[in-house]
Image (tube, rainbow over all chains, first blue to last red; front, side, top):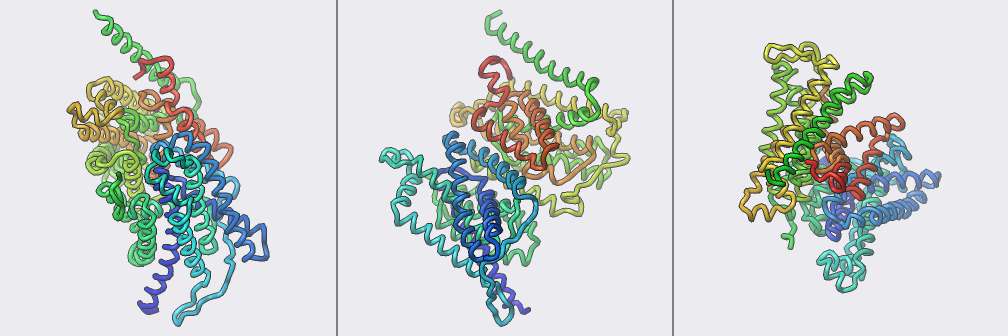
Length: 293
Length: 326
């Protein structure tokens, strides 16, 4: 295959990665932005989404499209419920203390991951794609489902943006993010906003996982990589800035495909990790973020 | 003699008796317990040294690092690679391991201490992750996840004309005990010294300490370097005593574990990390005989501690009963 088509393939793969990454990272960014807490268990909500998707499709066997549609609704709802319960039971008790919540979400990470190991087992299991058509380019065929993933992710991101900027709920979220005390003084139920934001953040990760699981297979350790990548994206994009997060996700998702052509994945990860650490040391507000008030 | 001086002297007596008592108890334990617990107690004592080192930064200086596996790993690989690749012998390898941790902690401290709070936690985690990935990347020397073993002449340490057989359980136990005791004594001396007081002051209120004229950056750098060096010492000792070096010890799990041990035993207490390591080790030991998902126990205990008992065992005890505990 020539270089041109090869680059085109890398571009397509990069777009898929970027779309899913943007969804996951926006969830993390939303939680950080509004609640000012770092959710280390975010990757596990992603994993739970994939595992529940497998569970849904295996219940409704024979009709992959139907099972997948059910998964697309049921898995995020279940994950959102789990997230909301843990927010009420744990994070609220810690009074959203930034350091305490990191330790608590680490604990949550282990608990969810190990429960998945007990309940779901150590195997990676495939989920059938709801549609099977292939797009035939002159040089290679490409799974049409992957483009559906991109479209769905874009639609969901638009919906998130719409909710945040055009609805009352979004207004409450933004008010809480801007100034918690004043929001409380204006009788905004900050407490409830926090619970909703944490659940929505987890649901975004879960829905991203449901979309990707027909390509990737469900496994109890699959949350680690999305967590690391989302961290990178959120930090580069500016902590708490949704717009920055989406831009960074596209840049990093796209370059991920291209970098992996030139370097071994381990070396690429090392360089990315060190770069992000350096960004945090010298520009803690992120590359595109504004200085914290 | 004034009342305060008498009280101070009484407290010193109590500290010497209680901490000396724990060390004496650990010494006596080797004559009572069976071979299995003998080995695991040796392991616990080396890991407890790791926890004591972690506690200097976390408990006394108030800096929560999520990347101390990096320093443990530096000691482990520093010693392991020096021993197998450069043939410096066991005692030489021990020194190399400690030096590796010291240099790394100092150099890294210059960079990462520019951050604080949540950013510090993430930056330390990122550097530790980079360190872990480096271990995997240089798989030709480190043999990655599989790790390598030290054998033959490397199981003998020569020091001042003495020769120690590191494969012998009794020697191993007492070396580990000596290491732990030295670190506990050093830690008591540190926290009772003026420097230790400044570290605690930084933990309580960094702004105010700076206003009082202390160069807090320099004190934090000292604490990080000391903490990293002790953790590397524990790592080097682990490599030499148990003759195995593997990537697991540099992974994120070994950054979380010392945090857990310290939280369980009691933040900012000298013996807390020792108690925490001992309890957690046996808890995991028991859990792993029932299920392969033993990390579940780690998560649950961590959660209970952070939500209901942030002071840990000895921290709570100090608050309620024994205020003199260092």
